[in-house]
Amino acid sequence: MLLSVISVAGFSSPVICPEPAKAELSGSVYHPLSKVIVACSDKDAVSWAETHLKEWYGEYAPAVSKERDGKINLGKEAYEMEIGKNGVKVSAATLQGVRYALYSLRQIAIPMRGTTVVKGWIVPEGHIQDSPTMDFRGIHICWFHETEPWEVERLVRLAAYYKLNYAVIEPWGTFRSEIAPWFGWPDGTMTKQEVQRIKKIADDLGITLIPQINVFGHATMARGGAGKHSVIDLNPEYQPLFEPLGGWNWCLSNPEARKLIQDLIAEQMEAFGNPPYFHIGCDEAIEPSCPDCLSRPYSELFLEHIKAISETISSLGARAMMWHDMLLEHGDPRWKGFYANGTSQTAEALKGFPKDIVICDWFYEGAREAYPTLDHFKSLGFDVLTCPWKDPAGIVSQGKYAHQKDLYGILGTLWHHYYGFDLVNTAFNLSNVAWKPDFSTPYGVAYHVFNHLRQVGWDMGVTDPRRTGIYYGEIPSEPELNN
Image (cartoon, rainbow, N blue to C red):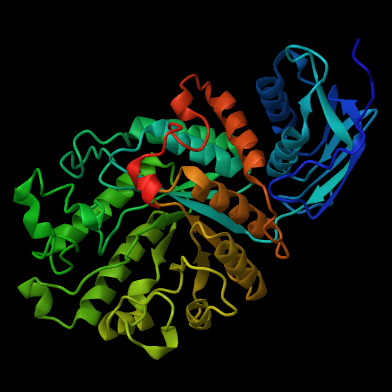
């Protein structure tokens, strides 16, 4: 017999990611998850709730009904949730708010106790109220040659579950272009069909995918230390499109290179459903080795290139995003301790950049009291994203600084660390500081993240043990042992 109320002595409140602004949950009184009432004017809110609650809870999914009351006085992503003996009431002004409420509900619901298999679900009595304090909450995901589509899907699903609203997808020679089939590795797994499949999932879960092409450095679309070039290793006839030295940069003086980039941008924009942003990379370039490029002031050539690319993106209804480091002169004492890889000429070009470009300022170390590079770009009139990586203290510090300085938002990076505790630390802390400016990293979050990844796996229908948890296996590889 299932009890209507379950008392759990000494049980602490569950962890919700991101931590809500207000959460008063009982540690002793649990109610059956039998009814969810949705108060939201969005016409799709009830059907979305019904579909996903059925997906998550199967035959024991709660009944969903719509409350017909007045206008909900909440922000566009805010939500309130009341849990009591009469069921769960979710209030939100938009479908996105309903999504976020139900993601929180899923994180605190547990199976009814005392049975061998699931016979129902219970939730703690209480009240939750939350709203994000940052508009742009993103994560940057790389799609490498070794990356399989399910890995990207899992990361996108987790990001949405953690209430981030953007995911930049960077192909490393893996996008299978139809207009230039030779552009990238011939067996790349990032096909248009896979992009559109993952985009459909992302749209449903409330996260917008943003494509990326590196239009300056990183033109090899392969890790620098690998010595590979995803175009000219196999198709040497296309060498004129790239700088002679390693092909690391695009040849900015070659109009055919720019035309190809513009065409590829249009192709990816279409594949991604015409999102509001397009990331153009531009980090870690090297000085030109091409005689045509060397015949002109490099600041002039660089500015001309970026303006042309930005105009192309604007014509497609989007804004360009770019990494910051080439826009700061290496050796300038103002940037000591931060990342500045540019020359006096690339830094000079910044003065002429269109102000609608979003500057993505990456810093991958621990906490700092101030971030002068962030201040610099904002003072010049740009929208600025702070971009941390894996270090919990650094992620929280940069997020708090973004709140303090009223920056455009945060874009956490993963690179190839979409496994292990780097994934745990990045995803959990990034989500929390994007929603709560006074968040501080709690101890012992791993098991909560394990639970959430497990739930994502259920949604994906995972049956392969290598696709569960935070590592493919349980015996560390040599690189993992050496880290």
